[in-house]
Image (cartoon, rainbow, N blue to C red; front, side, top):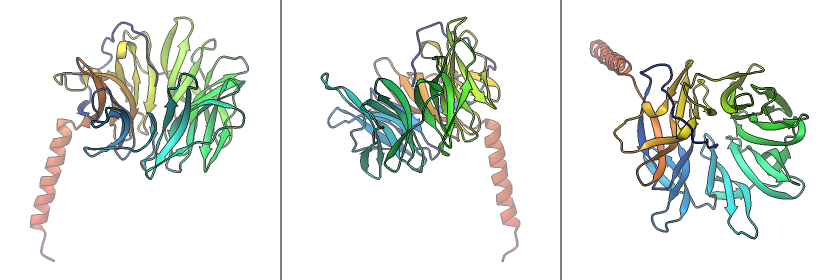
Length: 350
């Protein structure tokens, strides 16, 4: 995902008290947690303790499995555990990045578009095996959708280029594309049609990073008047600012779940959660005595779990944030269980 410039820190917006999260470490030093699916699986990169090399992994229910794949950048994870990512060669004479998927123990390169591909990227995958991403063709980036061994160019909004950034289970693809004017707007592609989602500033640019099942997309706009990135929500044919961000100079929305919870990034490595009209500094919602600091987030699932990265004094690593039930919710649950137990004891024998 995107990184931001170093700028002043966030003044905590909105409520003093927000939802709470536990933090679970998932990777070795230098690793990352890149994406989480609705089954609670997390995929990312970690250091192989045997070889010291960085390898892709899949984590679920406390168990991390190193994957036998050359994918060295994990980008997306479907609900049934398929991984989409990129394989980069580091040969200075012939540097290339190729998109690939890992499924059922095998790695498959995605087919190129017509033309001469210089490099390609995978950004999203669903359970049907559809993959969205971008390839560089004849010097221009082109968004594509790959399925059943065929890659199809998604076209543009009228300009020279497009790039895909995310996709939902229904195959809706979002990203950015140049219209005839040349400055990128956010787009949504579905059913063979690319729709211009606009931008907050007619003189600026915009891109969508993610889209949920309802077709609501989030991303960012560049505001030329103040020279700032602004987190943006795209829905019902309009682009609107997302949330209030206190002293943030820049903000980017990076992912959205089906409940409308949004995660994103601000200045100087700050991260945020937006839900029910309120913006929270995520660093204030996790334990403060862990000895390390949340520095980035990348993915949120429909249970509100978040994949991200935290850093200690000497290294960074992948983490999973899981919502902690509110005390009132726990009390209600215990009361309900007690009532159920009492009713079962009073029930006549059958």
